[in-house]
Length: 421
Image (tube, rainbow, N blue to C red; front, side):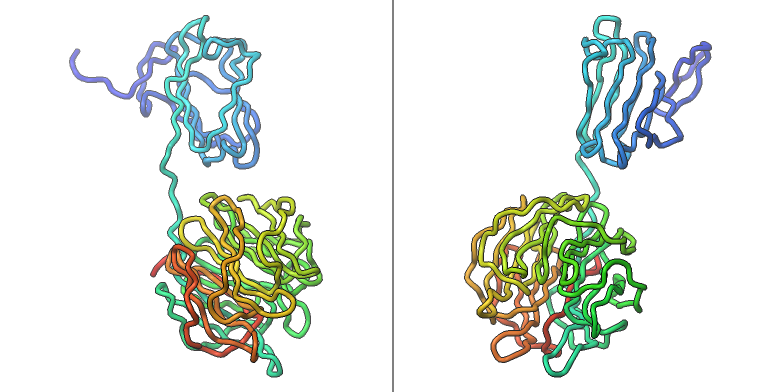
């Protein structure tokens, strides 16, 4: 007999059968909290919802092999445990705890003998994890002019930071509203005052088109804030007058969830994502005026209050810039509107004040653009509503005022959209 036999395993029957990479791969993704595995097989272990205990065979022969792969890159959140089922694992008895806690890991174990038992041939981590393309464009929408009323206006921001002239917005006109990016290239506007507190929302597609109203979910309120979070493109609305400890999560497909109670106690605050793993931070605000912040995990869990750093103020805005960095800016410190900014590090640490650049104003909005830059715009200050904007470089330097484009107004919202420049 001549020829080459490839990608085969020797079955217990003694027959040789084709199997990819020498293994039979399970056709089912394992999502349960327990699973019993067999030699000669590979398994995809999905721990997105729970930890998983993996029971190995109670008997094994030298050369038996099992491969386990982190299907959803979530072992770092929900780990796996190996029950060696009476056999040793790397020379240790099965009474010892064997836990793998690294996202993206794969484990290739081979049975040696009764002394050492199962030994990892490989326990590698796949370093390359796809990253969603950065958001390139932004939008300012809605708002109010004192003495004139709520405005049905939007202004798009190009990937180079150029603000477009006014265009009419769809949906119920509101002020003291919030917006956030979701799904990495789309936006959502929610809640706000339409004459009274509302809970309606409007989706923004990746071309910057605002949809008609979506029936309200959650407590109607105004003066809230919002941000994206997580690694799947989710978002969350925080607090607001009439619901300071109320939050509403937004799925990666733009569906607003019912109320959840959050640790923060915020109204007229600001929120922004930071870091490289989808964390967020919400802070400052009124009732009373504060500089306290709260970190938000990449699963949307709001942590305990962090002692305020910087100038206590409300009616400010926040945006991300650079690589994992963010910036709180502008607002009202009680006596007056200011242009003060506070940087946020890649680990969520808020820096002390940076002297204000540009016109001090409150009830301002901000968004990221161009992948790694930000823009603050509009608001009200000395002399009334403003239409000026301030660009922020990818190193966090705030530029002087850019001349007004569009209708000057305040209490508007802004967010990023589009992954195409």
